[in-house]
Every structure is written in C-alpha cells, then in structure tokens.
Length: 266
Ligand SMILES: NC(=O)c1ccc[n+]([C@@H]2O[C@H](COP(=O)([O-])OP(=O)(O)OC[C@H]3O[C@@H](n4cnc5c(N)ncnc54)[C@H](O)[C@@H]3O)[C@@H](O)[C@H]2O)c1
Image (tube, rainbow, N blue to C red):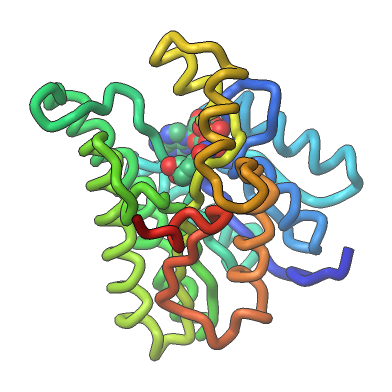
C-alpha cells in the first residue's frame, strides 16, 4: 500500500457490519483506511461488530481502536469526539457510514414509526458527528468529511423514507461544504448504487422472503457496467480518495459509485 492516509486520525461511524457472507461498506472502508496509514477509530453501536473490524485490522498489522457510541445519541458522540481529541490530538477524517432502511414502504403504507426511525437514524448519525467534529477540524484548518448517501437519493425508488433521508443527507453535505470551505474542511458524499453487501443482500432477501442468489441475479442485471453489482471495496476506494489529500480541491461532490446506473436515463 502507499500510505495515502499516513499520520491521519480517521473516525469511521458504522464501522461494523450486518452479518453475512460478504464485507460491508463501513468495515471495508475502515480496513482500507488503516492499510493506507490512518489510525482508525471504528465506531459502531454494536461493540462486538466494531471489535471484529478492529481485530481484522490488527491481524494485518495496522492500527485501530473500537468505540461503541450510538451515533444518534448526542452525549455519546460528544464523548467519542472528546476522547479521540484527548488521545490523538486531532481528527483528520470523519466517515459517516450509518444507514438503515428496515420497515420502509410506499407512501400509502408507511408506518410513521418506521418513517421517524429511518429519518432519525440516517440523518442524526451524520449530523451529530459533524456537529462535534467540525469545531475540531476548524481549529486544525483542515479535515475531510465523507457521508455515505445512496443512489436512491436521486434515482427512482418507491421506498419513501430511505430516499427522503438520503436526499436530505445530500443537501446537508452540500450545505456543510459551502459553509466550511473557508475553514479548509472538505465535505463530500458517496452515492453507492447496487452493492453486494450483507446489508443489501441478507437484509433485503430476508425482508422480502426471496432467495439470495435470485436477488443477486436481479440486482446484477440492473447494473450497466459488466452486469455486476459493486462491492464494499468499490465504496471504500472512493472514500479513500475523498479522505486523502489527493482530493484537496474536491468538496461538495455527490459521487455516484454505481457502475453507470445513474448515467442511464430512459
Ligand atoms: N449495500 C448497498 O447496496 C448500499 C447502497 C446504497 C447505500 N448504502 C449505504 O451504505 C451504508 C452502509 O453500508 P454497510 O454495508 O456498511 O452497512 P452495514 O449495515 O453492514 O453496517 C452499518 C453498521 O452501522 C451500525 N449502526 C447502525 N446504526 C448505528 C448507530 N445509530 N450508531 C452507530 N452505529 C450504527 C450497524 O450496527 C452496522 O454495523 C449505509 O449508509 C447505506 O445506506 C448501501
């Protein structure tokens, strides 16, 4: 590897993963950041999931530590940021990966509990870490924030809560990018398309009661590029670029990582 994040402290929120037979976006990003020289704080409300990520990173000989903050709990997020600054003196990269969709539905059928939960988790889990990390980055005069949105924010989707939450996350990203440009803080979003991750495959297969291989085949067929879904490593590599100094002139970008799906109109 090439030390593209050498010396940087990176907080990855949602660094564990949904159990399954492939790797999740947050875990792959944490591992890649560590391979590239970052000290990774792997945050997940499920301590076992965060610790599993850290174990994988340490097994490769790299640096990481686990934290079990719930990213929707302001006191927990404040403690996480304070502890990171106390221990490491800075936060160079904030990667907000948390996102849920369970219980989502079409407008006529959505339960308001599900609406509230999806909107709250998908937005607060990015807003709160940003709220508490921004003053740290402003003090440094430098920092990179990456929010994991979704292609669903801009593509057709009947599931209203997830789409609305990710569209709002895109707007939040652009607002922060413009507001904090003068502070040297870059804020970008990644819009993954159809990815072969446990959150998507195991999650959707069990929610809809469909066979996993059938679901994989259906999703593969919808992707223009090689008719194959992406993997969590594709998201991780996009995140690595945005987090690194190579992207020093890139802010306010909503980057699709989608095998060309967003380019196909009609
Ligand atoms: N997989 C896809 O096809 C796809 C497509 C588009 C966008 N995305 C986005 O990718 C992101 C997730 O990808 P993933 O593969 O890492 O998912 P994942 O479910 O495997 O991992 C997310 C992690 O976040 C943790 N988490 C959930 N709520 C939390 C909270 N309040 N505080 C702290 N941690 C919390 C979970 O415990 C889990 O370990 C989401 O934002 C999702 O919307 C995925």
